[in-house]
Image 1 (cartoon, rainbow, N blue to C red):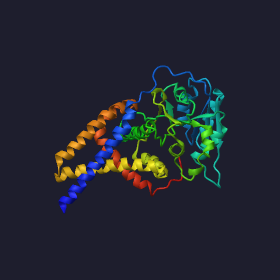
Image 2 (cartoon, rainbow, N blue to C red):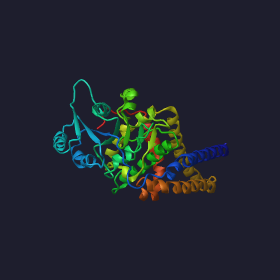
Image 3 (cartoon, one colour):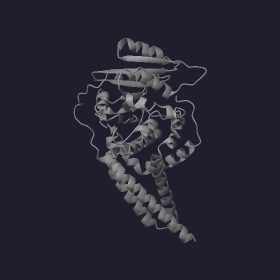
Image 4 (cartoon, one colour):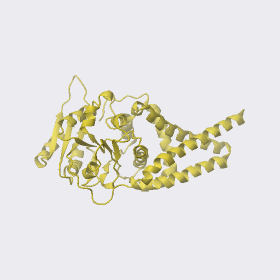
Length: 373
């Protein structure tokens, strides 16, 4: 009986190995081989509205907003929604409005009868914007260059309604920073590869663009307004298609932000995002679940077989084969996504990543959040 159990588990181990190879070869290689635009940014004349929702972000607005307002682009406005802030955000924005004529500020005040939230704030900002093409980011983000708008806007050709950008974290010291950056690259590898293979399923609100027509034809965030998160990934998941979505990965288009520095703040951030995945389309839930579960079981069974010395050479051989292929593909991806230094930590962080996905995914099925900031 014990032999049959070992054989069954080893077959499961091999199946997980095959599933992992599928994701690496059929999806992630597309991102590894993708060539971002190089050279000077193209001259684009599409009017753009940059939309930022901010709650108690006075320091970040003062530090980051000028880099957005001073973009090298001929026709754009910046719409900032000051969402129920009780810090000095109002004073900071009033001062900037005197200097920048293309800065528009909307102020939301707290109401006793109802709670607002980021989706409500963004909806007001979209309605107040004057342009068809919308570009979204957050107050704690700073563009990598003065050509951020140009690079993102250049993708709005005929039929394109969604542009997926990339937002890395600044490199700082410490384990939390390193793993947060690694997780961000792994997440980006998944959703950017999906878009490049004709299966877009999410985007990141720190660097995302879409059209106003798409927003209103889809009735905005109405179908998931009851969920505190999802203004970015749920919206893209519901409305992105192989024909209306493109990817922008020029380094000039990156939007940088600061990673959390403590486990408590990191967990609070992740808690806001937990549980959103269960609202994705069925095929995307299955795709993400197969990757997460197969990766986790692969590592658990590998460790088990090595401890029990059951086919240890074969088990180790499959692991080494996967690791070599993974490192070869990820070497190019990590260079593209500003994580070259993290490539060396792949064996350890990959195990931690799949553990994190399964543990936090399980937690996310039971958690509810009531505030976005």
